[in-house]
Length: 116
View 1 (cartoon, rainbow, N blue to C red):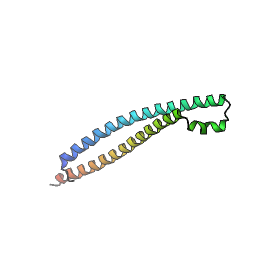
View 2 (spheres, one colour):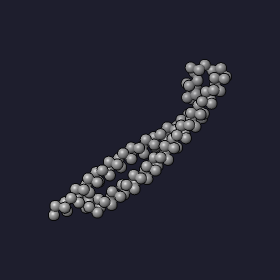
View 3 (cartoon, helix red, strand yellow):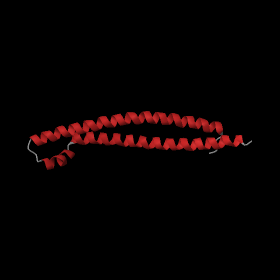
View 4 (tube, rainbow, N blue to C red):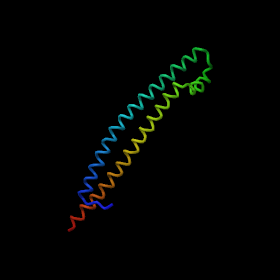
């Protein structure tokens, strides 16, 4: 795709806006991940304490709790949030690369006119 200087500048503005939006979403996803991780760990700890109090051997508690439906659901939500968070981080890196490439193309395009 050959773009002229104006098109390249417009594309740069679009990429910058998309990057800014993605950074905002990245922050929200990070907060959501932290909240879900907290909820998972608090529930896990509470259930572990209940099992310890009931006399279950400590070495079996973590294996036992893995199969708990409520804990499994919290962990699933946390893991999904982590996937979204990491994906947004990769998108930020891809957008930054696209911006650098677009910037280089813009400089090359506009420098053509300097030599005329």
